[in-house]
Image (cartoon, rainbow, N blue to C red; front, side):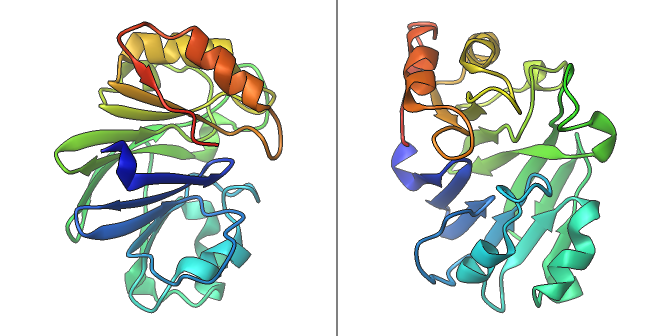
Amino acid sequence: MIESFNVICHSAIRIVADNKIIYIDPFCVEKELNDADFICITHSHYDHFSPEDILKVKNENTIIVITEDIYVNVLKLGFKENRIVIVEPNKKYKINDLMLETVSAYNLNKAFHPKENGWVGYILNLDCERIYIAGDTDITPENLNVKCDLAFIPVGGTYTMDYAEAARLVNNIMPTIAVPIHYGKIVGTKEDAKNFKSLLDGKIECKIMI
């Protein structure tokens, strides 16, 4: 199923699966596509909630999934109230034909992503597989309990877990495939992705997509 995914840049992911086009945190989108059925935003930082890039992928039927703190800003982008879904951490949702779960995403020992902000990662159920997009997070009790087939995990450090912590998380939750993200644009380098891959359990396939 990995062929259904494209990491555009940083943490921005485009998914084509189950007859749907889904964007996670669109950022640095090169051209106007206006093809999104769903947009899922993990939190309000500019490299995850980018109004300019959202406008490049949204259309009048797009449903946007957000945390409550960006609701007013999303209205200003032209989304109608009935196309906006506000989510909370650690809940399950059915949005039309999309099944998703949220997982708390936060820092334990740094102040960039406080738990009380209610920011999230997502687990999407697509083509009978569970796809985990971690968001900006450290290792937490919540994500150590994630069960998934494919995991997109930040490895760049500074604002999130670093590559060694990311590998420790993935070796605990044991997806079939892991994809390192959140490097190469704001913080982190491709070396972080390679180092992450080198630390994974041999049963886990790693795909470097940036």
